[in-house]
Image (cartoon, rainbow, N blue to C red; front, top):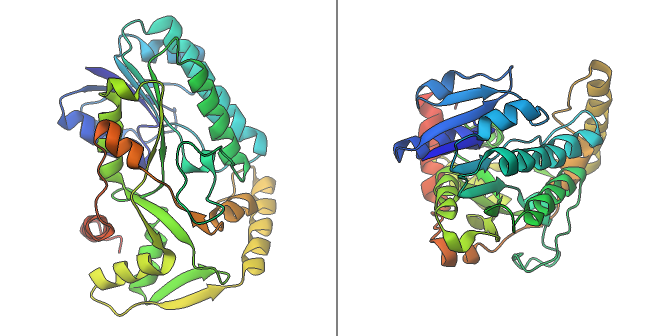
Length: 325
């Protein structure tokens, strides 16, 4: 099998490439000219330099591939319009390249996000049957990309996957939480104890490959989650595996954090860079119930998430080995 992975130098992408290489698949990556390609060398992956708006590079990248795993996109942007330009329009351009230049394609797997579906309004896990209700421009752009993919279902072998909050080796988003808990603190914004569906990256990439190999997954959308926990439960499990007492709550006033995000956005616009902290992503993350039902994926292609304790143990070991915690 020769496969194309977009976003291959990212957190999920590196883990997916490792899984594909372990199965003996030949991996090609679409990488930006500024991407660090050194991790790809360990897996003998070839690469094509280009971006999602580079039609020539895309046509070259998809030639002779049997599978496309489309992970590339942005979660932070200098302007709201950037989300659509990259997440939606970039996906549309890649689909068009596959139509024209990939006659042997067996599967186009789009890695979307739970943000495209939006959180649960009631606390009951969201299923694929629920109407999507994204709460911010990132989720809206991912939903539009899903719609573009779904519109091609009669012309291309497409599958849409919606991962939940992902943690594991190479992740940097959850790393500050692990470090804070090691210091004895559980940072919390406001007074809500958020409910979050968290998924270990190893489970996710195995699920991605299983979906690509499953004819019954074609033309379908699936949630790929893990287990649902409160923020407190996640912090307590990290502390338990560190051999520590449960962390103390470090409660940050919601309005204070939102004000800080506004200031960060203002500064980012001045220097022409995406803001690491922004109001829209905070409002999205502070929804109380990011809970989802992955039973459809379990039923159709055998997706099987592991327990939180197992994933955290593996992640902590990886962080320790690299001196990150």
